[in-house]
Image (cartoon, rainbow, N blue to C red; front, side):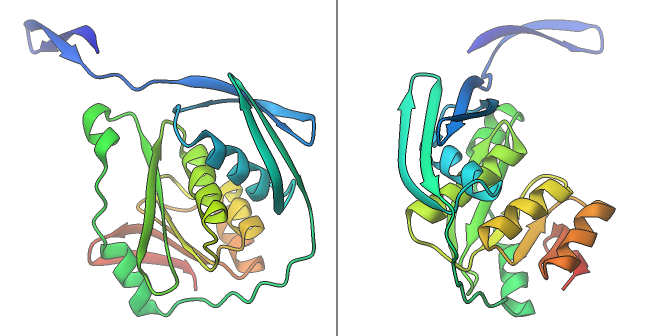
Length: 210
């Protein structure tokens, strides 16, 4: 909590405010320094695993160590034969219309969110983070740790090429966002046969690639 001065027209008021917490973590994958990431201090292990997988460094995790602000991931890249089926449009509509409880966004307005559903449209989990891409990493890591395959990704941010790349590396065949997609994101989605849906609000959505 901090004290802020809120100005409405000419009126000044002191108020207590809830502020999002930002922490920096250094990520190492197989002893190689990957980068420093500013994220919300929760689901750290999930973030590390999700980033390692979604960026294509590894697809099998052996061990994750968290040492204060350092995260060490050890894993390998193996040939995987996943049979991934796309859900039908009725399942996609169900996911779009599912109402998510956004606890930290409501408190601060500072959070993005990412969620995953199974191939039948059943909700699995929601994770909020100050970084949209790290929120995606965290749900991908959660799916890996809990043995969920064939998942649908629904998140709050604009759909960039980097998000489609993360999905492709993680075996995700459906991306749904309340925001639009870029041209490069759509191009990559077509190349990787990923269903891409933007401006997804209850009762309406845009299909960029099916």
